[in-house]
Image (tube, rainbow, N blue to C red; front, top):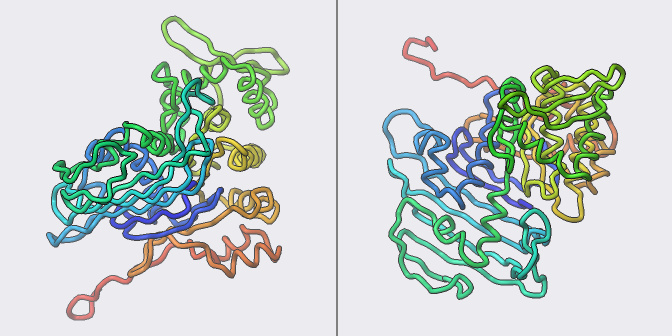
Length: 419
């Protein structure tokens, strides 16, 4: 899982350096960077497979990815710094990866570092859903150092050494990430996902890939239909959904003329409804549960505003499922939730909830304040008070003790005293 994540000049996140836990919640006023954090996770997941430039293009290119500045001064220096701890089921022992772009108008890699210990892949049948098996008695050191075009400290495990790399606008991780044991790290990063399911978009869903759910749920029908084809997953998924929406007794794939849909059965009447007829909350909940109940869920998962369109009971049940997935012994997911909801705050930060995660829960606050970090840990005084059961987490949130309330910026005073 991510044990350290730092960035500079990524969109609205001018600078931050955090140490996440197994379950994390990000609080903050509108426009302070919660969605930018989700974009950062999505951006990092694309780099090893798509490449740096292509990943940036998905977010509007370098001018949109790098923090903007007034005037025509020297561009900010975009940097990323990542530490991963052990995840045996996915072949990771430890990873430190970082890179920085030059302060130029074009994409130009100035520095890149990789120091990693990965487990050797075993030959033969995968463990689950294409994930290889690993030999924990054979850790492999992988690494390199790049400064501009010069490459050094290239480990033998990466193959033929190289002394120079002439593609200024690309990362070594992207160019070599599909080769040898480095594939393990590429697969790990590429599994990261961000979700903010749009029910209106999902209701128009008639096709698409069934491998991974789209960030906004555009292919929810084929994705959920694939999950429903597997007996243990289907039973668990329907049970989870019925816990929160008890009038539903079943869900199954269906086809109307030329397009695919899902058909829901009502318990008391036996009536059947297609996906576009269902409530927004039911659709959103079904998609999120399907992501969590995959045999191999994402290694890192960001869920934006899980409270949207959900009843309080559904929120509670969903977060209970999410915590269990985060604490699984095998193929656990590290979870990040962005939220404004007092109920989500209570469900994730209460004494009982933190006990469920063996105290591996963290809270961070996004902020926009002059000369301040963009993301900071929640105040120790608040977290200590919660641990001492001196009040519900939402009580401290309502009082502004987390520091997530909007900050009024002082405008420069013009000549004559008029702002």
